Amino acid sequence: MGSKKIWIKTNANESIAIGHMRRCMTIAKELADLGASVKFILSDNESERVLKDMSEKDGVFYTSKVLNTTYSEPLGDLNVLDEMFANEKPDFYLMDSYYLEREYFDGINGLINKHRLSTKTGYIDDLYKFDYPVDFILNYDLEIPENFYSAKKQLLGVKYAPLRSQFAKCDYETREHAKVAFLSSGGTDPYHVIGKILQEIYSEESPCRKVLAFNDFRCLVIVGALFEEDYKRELREFAKVNPSVTLFEGVSDMADIMKQADLAISAGGTTLYELCAVGVPTVVYSMADNQMEFVKAFDKAGAVRYAGDARDNHRLAQKIVTWGTAAVDSKGFRKRMSESARSLIDGKGALRIAKAIMELA
Image (cartoon, rainbow, N blue to C red; front, side, top):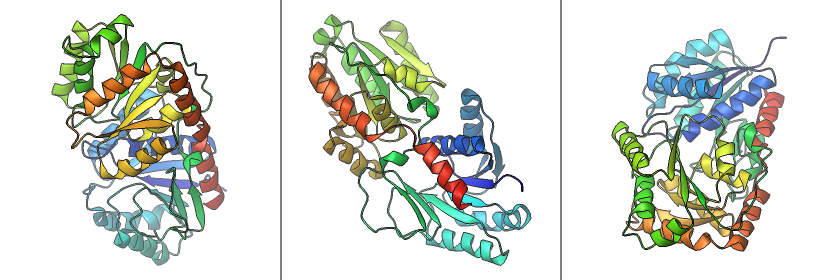
């Protein structure tokens, strides 16, 4: 018997958070390690470029198929997938896209029935649009409505957060005084929150400047893969004249960078789960509707502090920097937040997901 054929549908571009691609790649790595044959199903060449770029930085390689369809109109996939299902007969089809409506799932199930296949289907959800007609559902939100799904196999809760293996074993120390901050907005930063925060920290007019300068405060800044080129140049110029700012691009060992930080600033998304797994005290902000409730749940659990939404909070940067300044000398506060975060996530979710898929496929 050959290896299980697992297909994963996802995309990544300037309009789609890169976290979708990242989490699917993380699951794919665990599936491959378990002996599965994994293929990515992508709508366009831009998604394929992102997959290749991220794969090269991770030192791995994934097979992919570009359908040459429109990522926001996924019903166009079905005509292309019809022949692919008939010829390749996948054992499992995992889907990760916010653009999938009931008609798409019905179409996929129709192809499976048409070709008399035993293909199982799965979906990664955090929108709760409806009860998805799939065999497998993954939702790693902290709070999930009871009895919302009817899928045969349900992986629900933060223990299933699909993080890279580097986050499974992290030693983290809460230091007496905070001197290093980690800044990330994920793959994109459409509202230039990182740049505004850096200006707020290092501007001579900032009311927080005296406190942070006294502590020789440093910032470790993640430059996302899909940052605008002009914005990247602005950040590079800023770092040139501010030696306390270090930029990181194309990072492979994110956990190692996070462990150096005494506190973090992050958008809601995969990075937030990673920071919790490491145990970095974090102030988080949202910049999309689907992020708001889940980051508020983390705030409620004491794992992070929620600062607001980047789309409508014009004083967000000031609020975040004020919080960071207050936390500099509050070791007890940072330690409690770190312990709360680490108690939620152990970094082994991706392996749990891969095992469950292999058992069902």
